[in-house]
Image (cartoon, rainbow, N blue to C red):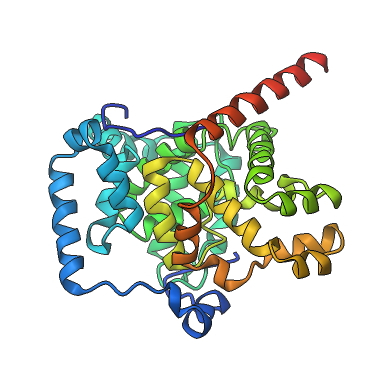
Length: 344
């Protein structure tokens, strides 16, 4: 697990879209009203003002009062300031200030023809019913192509990795292309460092970390997965590689990303643990999922209520895990894989 610690600004499905109205959202309206938050306009205004003050004094807040930033991210960033907050949280603003003209230079530079071809093939798959990307060769798809192509030139070691496309598309729904690009750079190279390297070794290690943490948080679910040989790579790969952009309903995704860009990749672990416990926690579900294929089917289609914004946030914050638990499992799984590699 590559924990992206607070950046202090000195260092820095499942298809879903804004109009998403499948069972995940319908479930909330029918059966899960207890998880809906009602926030008054006056409270929204107060939160906006607080965020504007923080953004105007960003370095000071991140260096001296990070806990307050984290607390406000966990409550949810107001829509009116979310794009700017994300840009600051992930370090994209700092990268943009350091390299004000580099995006345009990357667009003008030659790119690997294979990367260019692969990117073009994937453009129509990203949020295909969202108004921004619905038209082939439309402005949205053109901007998405430019952002992904620029990254492939900036980081030829990775080039283009398919899971970057939904992340870039999600960012473009909130901010101009140059800002989305630098956020993508930060997410790919810092938050998800190593995920897009050949062999996916880092992802496999983080799958082992997830499995170990699950043994602590939901032992019955862990035993079920072990019994039926359901490895994390079989169900969690898309969750992590795409940073949940292909998994969660729109409102849930926004709220989780507010936390993800503030706290780092451990948020993806927490969401994964909540989904696993929510989907396979009931004994009757585990009894019906009496094999590998049946278990994977449950995890590919978790109950709508489990993916709800308030359900996820509530249970994420109540997981019996500490920072030390994450760090311990990271060190343990890293050492285990090094030992295996040495023997091999």
